[in-house]
Image 1 (tube, rainbow, N blue to C red):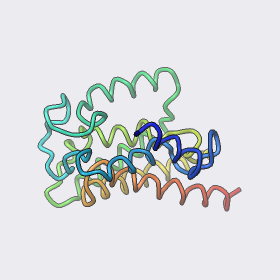
Image 2 (cartoon, rainbow, N blue to C red; image 1 turned 180 degrees about the horizontal axis):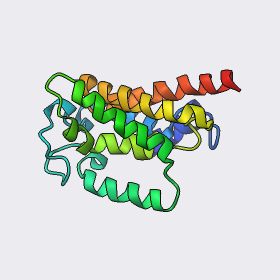
Image 3 (tube, rainbow, N blue to C red; image 1 turned 45 degrees about the vertical axis):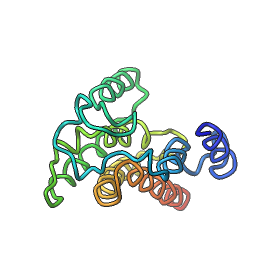
Length: 177
C-alpha cells in the first residue's frame, strides 16, 4: 500500500519523474507518518541514544551511525552536495543549541537530521540548482526541519518543513532566473 501511495503521489501531485515540485520520498513519508502506528518518538525525548539505534522510531531514523556511513559514501562518490548538507547540519546543531532543554549533539545524532540534511534535502530535482541559493536552502532546511521535528512530532514535522521549503525555493529560483 505504501508503494502505491508513493507512486500516486509522485505522478499526480508532484509533477512526475524529473519535474517534481516536492521531494517524492518526503511527500510519501509525510503521507505514511499520518498514521499513528507509524509515527516515531518525538525529538524532544532524545537522550543521545540515537547513534546506535537504542531508541524506537521509524526504520530510517533509528541508527544514525549507518546513515552517517551512507552519507560519507555519497560524499566520496561526489553524489552528496556539501553546499546543501553542510549548512543544513550546522544550522540543525545551532538551532538545537538554542532550543529550550535542547541537546544539540543529540539532535545531530538523531537520524531524522541526517536523513533530512544528507538524503532528502539534497535531491537534485527538488533542491535549488543555483549555487547562491543552495547554502541558504541548506541552512533553512536545518533550522526549519529541526524546529518542526522538535515542536511538531519528529520525522513527519521535518518532512513537512522540507516540502514547504521545496515550494518556497522553487518559487525563489524561478523569480531569481
